[in-house]
Every structure is written in structure tokens, then in C-alpha cells.
Image 1 (tube, helix red, strand yellow):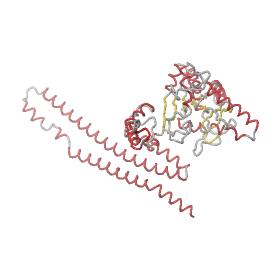
Image 2 (tube, helix red, strand yellow):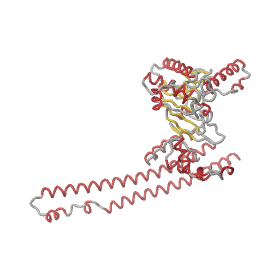
Image 3 (tube, helix red, strand yellow):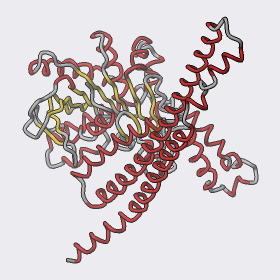
Image 4 (cartoon, one colour):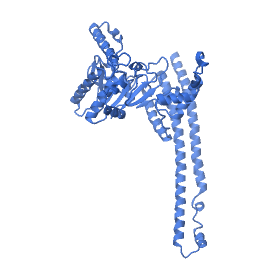
Length: 468
């Protein structure tokens, strides 16, 4: 078993918060019933922690088959200023932040004096892997590193280390990286070998923002030539370089979230992309200064955005079947119920609304699938009867050597589809299935109307309690 990408993102958000904790400390993911125990951590030029999932705050049932390593990105200049009162730690971090920043730009395409290869942080990550595995196997001799994650500068180092040990141990290590910095040159220089690239193409997922915030400084616009890239559109004011920014669900981006906001994300169907493209073309604000030169014409055409999507975000995802949507919705409904138990305020209102709408869609889809299954079964049964009748008639003609054609037809006159198949019952069954779908569609419509009122009702209720 491995943690999914969403769970890894949650851990990336905890790296810097939990670095001061001692090994064995259990922490909780905020607002969730998820707990992890720290196996190993370092807070130096490289910041990293290794954790295992546990059942509760007491640390029961640690799962060392899911030992996970999460490495932070380049340390931000001046972020240590809050430790001014702790002078020894302040100056320690001052040195380490300088070293971390220097490592990041040492091999960068814009500023690098020694362009290409991996940053010195890779050696730290390799050592951290070995120490983590050693500590984990003290607790469980069968412990393995199941997941690794890096952010920014640490991305290529994590990719290198995971692929190195994954190949040596002949097993998969799931890599979930965010905004890898200097990945292109790490591969081009041969620091990450072709064999490792092939390994990563099967086991790594890289999340990148549409602007390439910060990573454009690596000289290759943040290009990552390994793994599966999941790109998401960011708006003005959003931090595209933060691992907290992408909205995720399971092992992919939350397509519903981006679709509802007319934002592109890897994994959308052609229908979704074209609808967003129409919105973008319709709402595009023309720059009057250059409009007369025709430089803005393309951006008022939906096809411009469709082309940009295919270029920047990848191919269209296949349209999901109704059965696929039902399965996805059922899982999402379970997730919503779980979230409702730990949520409050505006978040709870939003979750209630989403739960009702998802349930409505699921009910309608189930009815449509049921009706289609009835149609398919009737069609299949009717076809089987027709084939059986044909086989019997052919056999009769073959065996009846001493009978005339008229005599044979007389004997077989009752053996026809019109007599063997009840068209009235077929019509009645199909009508019942159609009526069921119509009724469920009506119910789904009523549920959606109720969802429209949920926010207003909940907010009004909240105001009443506030006044009391």
C-alpha cells in the first residue's frame, strides 16, 4: 500500500511545522482524522521528515509498510527572523538558508556557474533515505519506504534517490513531487540516467502550476522530463510555487473544482475543455492598445484555448461512462460524510450542498443505467430468440427430405418471432423503465432545488443562533 497524492500534499504542508518535534512524536493533519508518527527528521540545509501512518494520537498500529519521506523545498530567505530571540538557532538557520538558496541557483540556467546536474541537496536526501530505512527496520524488520516527495529544489533529488533505490530493491517507490526545479538539466546532464527516467515515468507524478512560478528561473521554464505531469491553472495573486496550492483528490487534481471555476487542469475531457474555452474567449478583455494590430483576435476564439490546453496540459481525458461516474460519486459521497463529521461553519454548509447535489446526480445516473440495462437485456434476449428460430427452421429444411416446401412452411408457421416474442410485454417493460428514469430525474431536480436553498437556510439559522 502507498499513500495517495492528496495525503502526500497534506504532509508537505506539515514539514516545516513538525521539524522541531522529536522522533516518535505523533501529529494530526488539521481538521482530519489522520495521524502520523515521526520516524526521522532533519532541520539543516535540507529539511525533511519521515513518517508512518498510525491509528490515533497514542500512535497505535504504526504501518511501516507505508513509511513516507517528505522533503521541503529551498528555504526562504529571512524566514528565520521570527527566531531572533533564540540567537544560536537564528544564526544556524541564517547559514543553512544561505546554503539552501545557493544550492538552488548554483546549477540554474539563469544564474548557475556550473549549469546542469543535481544540487548538493541530493546527497542529503540519499543519506536521509538510508537512515530512515535503518530506523524503521529497528521497529519492523519488513519496513520499506513506500512514498517519497520533494518540492522545488528537492524534487530532482527525490526523483534521483527514489529511482536509485527502487531499481536496486526491484520494487516501486511512489514519487509525488511539486514544482521540480532544475529537473531538465538533471536529466540532460545524465545525472538522472535513462534507466531512472524510465522508472520514474512509471512511478512518479509531478504537480506544476500554469505560470511556472519560480521554476522559470531554472532556464528551462521548469520543464520536468520524467514522470507524469499534472498541471493546474493559477490566478493572479495565487502562489503557484506552493505545494499547498493545487486542489487535489486522491491521485490527481480535483477536476470538478477547476471545471466549476472555468480553470484548466490536466485530466479534463474534451467537453470540459471546450466549455471552459468558450467561457475564456467570451470573457477575454481586449487590450485596446494592440487590438488594432490584430494581436488579440486569437484570444477571442475558443479554438485558441483548446490548442493551448493540448500544448500545456496534455491530451483530453476519455469521457467517463455512467458506471464510472456512479463509482466516483459513491466514493465522493463517503468522503463528504467523513468531512462533515469534522467540519463546521461555512465549510459545513458548502459540504452539505455538495453532498445533496452529488446524491442527486448519482440517483439520476443509476436510473439511466438501469433503463439502459433493461433495453440491452431485452435486445439481447430478442436477438437470441430470433437466432434460435432461424437455426430451428434451417434444421427443419435440412431434415425434411420427403416434405414439400409448403408442407414445411405449414409445420413451421407457428415458429416465428411474432408468435414466440410478446411485443406487448416488451413495450410495457420499456415503458416502466422509462417512467422510472423520469421519476428519478424529477427527484434529482427536487434535490438540486433543495441544494439551492441549503446555503441560505443554513446561514439564516446561523444568524438566529448568533442573535440568541
